[in-house]
Image 1 (tube, one colour):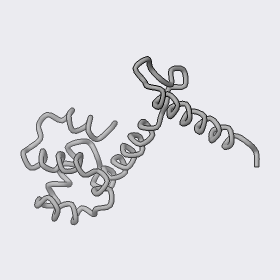
Image 2 (cartoon, rainbow, N blue to C red; image 1 turned 180 degrees about the vertical axis):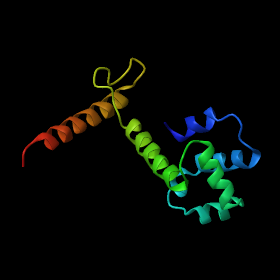
Image 3 (tube, helix red, strand yellow; image 1 turned 90 degrees about the vertical axis):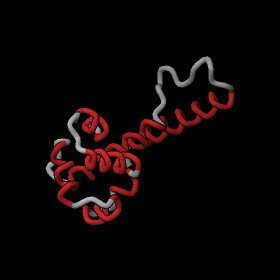
Length: 119
């Protein structure tokens, strides 16, 4: 489950935990490179508060949260470039958008085909 969903599912966060959640969601790319000490210094909370926050949203610890955060970022990047093969464009798309989406679709098709070939 994505971190954002876990946070919204947990309705009994303290103000400090809400601050931790807001910072993590707002600075995903930086947080994946922080240690728990660096995060605690960045948002001026204790390491134990961060650890309690991780436990409250069902992670074993900060490292597990960082792994899920990395997966969330990867999924977001993939979704940005994912084109529906059956309906690659809509009636509202202009000719440039249609051409761009077709280009991405063809590139993805060629990459997928290349990855299936026995070298």
